[in-house]
Amino acid sequence: MITVSNLDVQFGKRALFQDVNLKFTPGNCYGIIGANGAGKSTFLRVLSKQLDPTRGQVTLGPGERLSVLSQDHFAFDEYTVLDTVLMGHTTLWDIMTEKNALYEKADFTDADGIRASELEEKFAELEGWNAESDAASLLSGLGISEELHYSVMKDLSGKQKVRILLARALFGKPDNLLLDEPTNDLDLETVSWLEHYLSNFEHTVLVVSHDRHFLDSVCTHTVDIDFGKLQLFAGNYGFWYESSQLALRQQQQQNKKAEEKKKELEEFIRRFSANVAKSKQTTSRKKMIEKLNIEEIKPSSRRYPGIIFTPSREPGNQILEVKGLSKSFEGKVLFKDLNLNVEKDDKIVFISRDPRAMTAFFQIINGEDEDFEGTFKWGQTITTAYLPLDNATFFNSDYNLIEWLSQFAKDTNEVFLKGFLGRMLFAGEELLKKVSVLSGGEKMRCMISRMMLKDANTLILDTPTNHLDLESIQAFNNTLKTFKGNVLFSSHDHEFIQTVSNRIIELTPNGIIDKMMDYDDYITDPVVAEMKEKLYTK
Image (cartoon, rainbow, N blue to C red; front, top):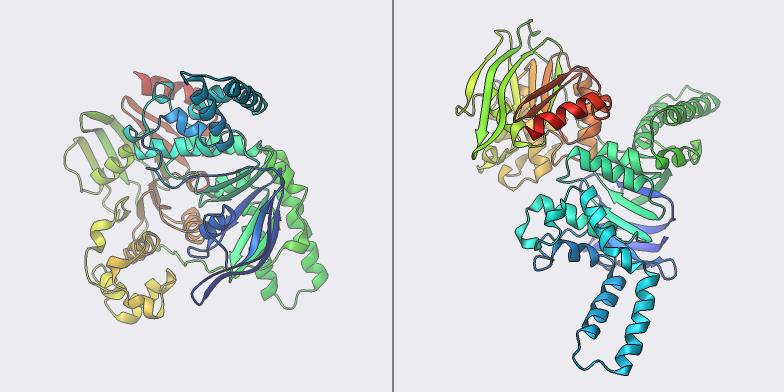
């Protein structure tokens, strides 16, 4: 349990939070949401005592342990993978270290024997004899194979380190667990494993994430950081978003009676709960619906970007034809002999165990990579807009936002350009900012403005939710669902894939899997699992 009392956090004259009083209790998972810069990560740092508050205090339950997902990928470079995980339980690790040091002494005394006996007792109480197998089990679940468990951390890749640090945070089932963006750099299968693990976790969890499916799968409550206030709501992100939008609409319907509004909210909760109850949901979601109530539903003051794609012409029947396409990189086959036809109204998600496969495919069909075998042909009516994975080269200039966007516009009228930037929530002095100093999220919003200018009927999106906040992801997601054209995309965002795609193509080194089905069905289909096994292990 974590209790926050009279908490203020201020940087200079800027007050981030004021007068926060909250209690986080065992058996619940709290999703911390808020716009970029609202202070989500700062709040976790205050809870973990990495940052002192201006006023107030944070207390844990008596004798409780708190574990934090480390963001420092180099802190454990000199340790083995297994030891890095074991060190996550500091009490147990200290006992193991002292015990081993005693047994290695050449002049082992009676006093040492008594101390060793005490340590053995504590070691047994903490289930120390199972520690290595528990740590190994976590690592395997997170995709770190057994042959790497005794490797030194500095020899591993950044993505592998992310998984090991996550295992370290989970190890020993801490009483309180703080996770800041735990799904970053995880593939969809590992995210699914983590969802299942946390859904059955019996202690207190606080998590910051931009992955809506993850938040919806694991969270019983939502903490919204807005205008310096932290508000606690029962329900996951999906409930918070839908209910706050409903309350906002009600606020604007001044002629509707209070009794009618109350009935509408009660009906919303009933429908939401029924959907959760009948679906293949996790334990945490089912716990969540018992706590929903209309008193907590409030209108959202969040601002969402206006992402609108308007094709200048309707696509014909010939969209894209790909024949015998093969691509290798650094001696590794990414995909081979790829044959496919994109049909009208297709919204295709491309997936692979090697994300380079999707990026290579998108670069080829956009004419940015000529080192491949095979052919591709776009239909005559097709106009494309491409959102690349790496946009760094677009921002190597001293242009301000208006000057930058004018490079890509037929109409360079300043009022016209400000309109497109305004939709992406850029206004006032922000428009005069140099593009070279923009954050990752701001650059993505600029790239989306550029795409909107193209009036394309086919969108090609390489991991479009990267760097975006939840509001931008939600707005992007909503517009793609109703887009009257074709979408070819890759994503790590489960919800994005599930709600946008109507066709799934998995690229492997030995062929493709091409299915017209829901993503949720795809990942649980035993026939698909068998096909994947064959295609990835040939």
